[in-house]
Image (cartoon, rainbow, N blue to C red; front, side, top):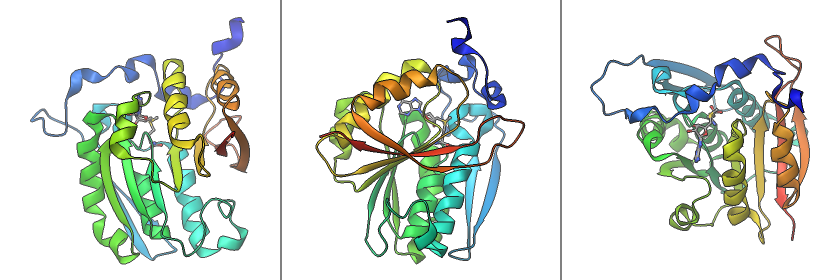
Length: 253
Ligand SMILES: C[S@@+](CC[C@H](N)C(=O)[O-])C[C@H]1O[C@@H](n2cnc3c(N)ncnc32)[C@H](O)[C@@H]1O
């Protein structure tokens, strides 16, 4: 059992337990000094640039994670060539989809989904993260709007049924990237997924990069409620032995 927590991926060092502590919450309204960076991502499919504000000194929720970049590329490529896309079974062409993103962080995945698919996207995360989600949604409203999409932001804490009630369940697809990391979050995330997926014909699309062997616990628990298959695997990079994997979850009826 000793190797349960064995490091298998160098990205682990980016996510220490300390990072997970809800930093006595500075919010984006604080006057305290902050490091701010704007990242620009050109989307070939819509010939437009999405701009994302990161606030790395505020913690893990305010920075871009490599796993998100995989979904951004897949969404961009899907719009260019949907027939050969690994996402073709998830995102029907021509439908005005309603998409919910969990643990959005900076919101890049949801914003790019709205811009490339012309979808109505709801970005969600812990309450203190929502002001930065709103900032990024507003910063990209023109790009998203020109594709016929919309982006809204709301708090959604995993494991809180009342938060799901507030958001509603009228979604066609749920997406997330890099949301399986600390083991105390496994159960709450699965609980929220159960509330959203069970008894419905909707898909949860999840990009994940494996850091710890213990993450198999999440997948074993999740398999009790969901059928899970792999849609895409990235080649490993940055010295890692594993690449980003994109999973599709559907509720067991
Ligand atoms: C590693 S970050 C990934 C962020 C983003 N999805 C990305 O890939 O760039 C994990 C995200 O999950 C969010 N999160 C952690 N615990 C959560 C909870 N209990 N409820 C909702 N979101 C949570 C964090 O705030 C953070 O934004």
